[in-house]
Image (tube, rainbow, N blue to C red; front, side, top):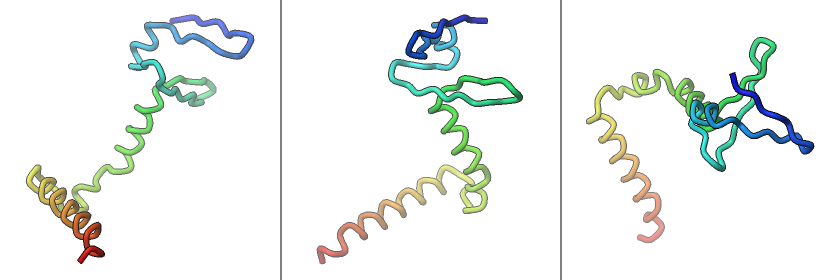
Length: 91
């Protein structure tokens, strides 16, 4: 358990061990989440990544992507479409 003091401006210094556990670096944002009557601090980038992961869960299967080769084909197709879209007015 770590302890921090609140300054007159409402600021706290997150203890070093907590920063290490949350993988927080200077400039990172933190998120305060209420869970079961408690407020939990979390690494905002990590939480955003987890939300995206959950939202995308199962999407590869729905799109028929089942291998690295399928991913590479999709990337090539998207790049080709972007190239054509960018250059179609130049013809």
